[in-house]
Image (tube, rainbow over all chains, first blue to last red; front, side, top):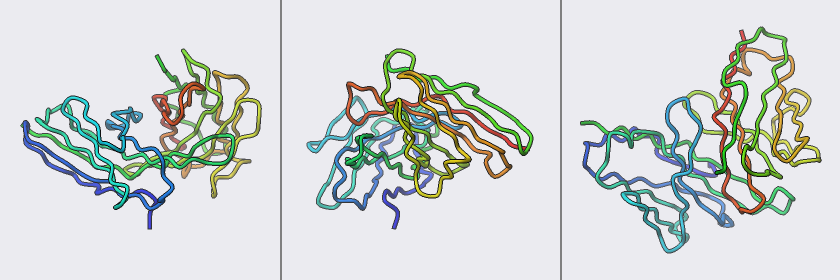
Length: 114
Length: 116
């Protein structure tokens, strides 16, 4: 089983619609969670952190479910510019001096269409 | 703030040659930098963690003698792909962790390596 798993999609979303997808993780010691966005042939860019209480940033809402070990991302009022691959990132605190280790999910591809 | 640059952005080389990729944190000091590799339609895979002034820590399956990492200053880490082969063709991305933050990493724009 992969440490971090995502539905690869693609999720075809009509412009203006809402889309949501999850990311499951296997290590119960995971401590921090993030959603990154990656456009084709570009580097990942931080979209938002995911807090235990859930958090919202504009049209984006992230949730964490520790009991079931998954995080979710919901995008409301989808824009064409939201088309991208969304990477789930899970952080496990390491004992070594590096401090932490990020593990990336395989990404969920979202295509917003007019 | 928190800008990371990489150079070159794209490189094409012949099989057997060595390629050096630079990763710089432009507006912050990075005690730790990370090197990732991403093959087409796959996710990022951590290759190694680079700490300033010490040896890099390599992930399982990554050959340290093939992928040489040097983190000589708080703003620069280099990855050298030695004796590159076509299977090394990939998208190499570095990231840097600011000393003042905990888990957030800032990514460079990546280097696309093509080995002929």
